Image 1 (cartoon, one colour):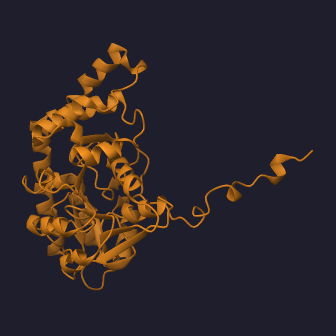
Image 2: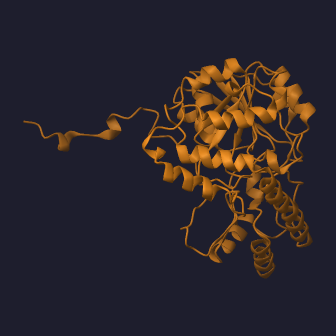
Image 3: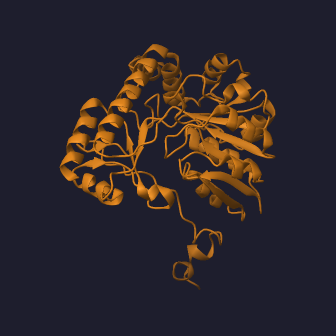
Length: 364
């Protein structure tokens, strides 16, 4: 009788594309109890709405956690739809915006399809393209020297899906809405405007209002950044009724839990607190940029909650990243393309930002 344990090989059973696959690389996550100053994953330095505590206590006291959550996240859909004058069914509530992106890719990207994106932008897009495991091609179009999109080149590209972060990551640069709309109008496939950082720029910058005029446009949003809920994992995708209805077919049955939905609802509704903390982040962004520039850093104007910084001549970005890490300050360094000449720094609290500046002064 053959002993299965001696002949079993999982490598022989997994899909042939998987062994060579390179997964997404997240920013380092130190233990929750450490004293590390964490400025590497664009989390909000301030706590979420204080109204969350009471809402969570009510859920726990009610005993409803024994039941399944609302399949659609209906109350959250309705809150968002009211702000944008949309049908709630145009909104797909997801387990973080990354699930929204995965569902979008799964719905669209098939064998030999092409996914187009500026480069660099959110580094999850090429990973998702490969994760579909269908032989799709990821076409990266380099940014111009000034870190803006090369609209002339992007407009010439053809593909099933065009993705970009708006404002862009990791650069923090925001493109003119008119140029983005022209690109959307001329692209034959679906266009994703990934608006993870949109709340840190001007209120009228979002492309959500343009969905009614551009049926090929979808917009993703997240509660991780501006609502300080990165540990919760709630996001959403907005598009036409037709597009969202197709994508919804692929979502998990109960993808967002009851507590997650309630916390997101309360956070979204607490506009006053949201605007207060948003204003603090933007104010600190201005101060930190000015201080870093006084040390010789070159930094493009940022419309996000981070700064994309080129150190002064003679200072290695990678070396500075490693030296700061030794002193328990985490920033982000990407070693490829134009990003290799920069470091990315999340906006922290005033105290964290001052510690960062003081430490950098001692290193350079």
